[in-house]
Image (cartoon, rainbow, N blue to C red; front, side):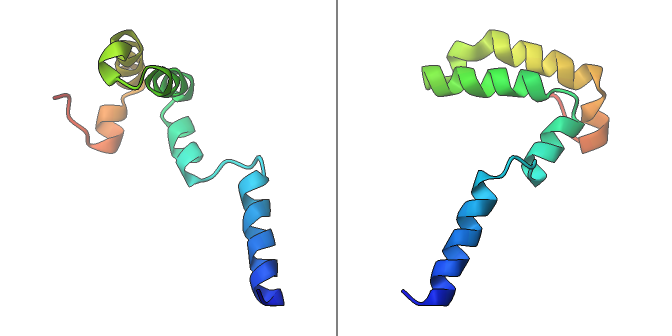
Length: 78
């Protein structure tokens, strides 16, 4: 491995380890529903089945609507 490759890998690892919010985090925080999203994601991670997370999904949907994210993101309730 060349020195430049090693330096690039170190910079990449440092970027992954920092606590600064990335673009994804910023978008989630801007919805006003970051906590609800985290609980829903954690539920799915633990249970490996979205159908087992209907309570968390309903809480997230209520938050999404409360913050008018349908209008902001041009999404539609299916």
